[in-house]
Length: 234
Image 1 (spheres, rainbow, N blue to C red):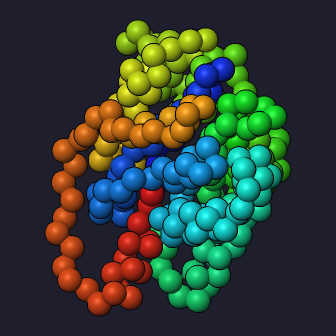
Image 2 (cartoon, one colour; image 1 turned 90 degrees about the vertical axis):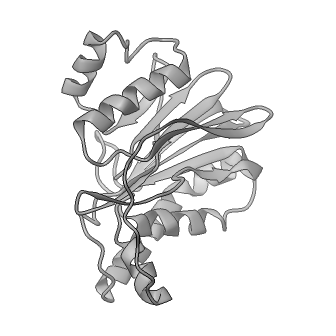
Image 3 (tube, rainbow, N blue to C red; image 1 turned 90 degrees about the horizontal axis):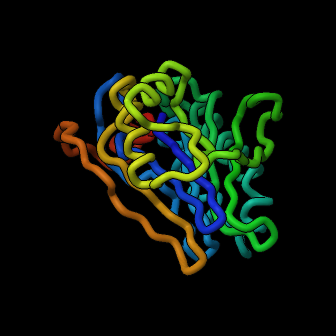
């Protein structure tokens, strides 16, 4: 899986992601997980097998128009990417983990709504049916964070981080949340990347890098190498 943390304010939308790809609890590789669609004032991220993330990026690349067109097409794009992954698995491509449970986020600047974020999942999400867009609205700056359970929230609060504060320094807040995610799970690693959508464009930076060892991958024929990385968890 991946760490995904989203913020929405009147002036911007933010998406923080980690950079680790994992298989069997080990770091397989490092990569940028933010799917940057600067021409549509948007950024997306996928949680699930790496194959799903790659397929979603391809499908989103076929959507024409502005952010609102992309947002309207997002649920269907998630479903198409998921269906294509399941078809590949049925054809024999090895993909570890639960391939039925995937989700994706989209943040950006809507002409109608202003800065906004959406989540789409392959499962019922708090009463929202599978493959249906769920607007991420909150009275706090933080709109979404996963993985994030109550125990993690309690630890952050005890350490002085107000998780649900109405206004925050996004860089410091996102880094505090991701550090705690990293400390409490083995699926967050590599680096913390923050991608920001503002009215003048899309910008991305690395907030912190972590010394996660990446094994030397032996030279493999291209199809075998592709299958190995397709099975990693993003």
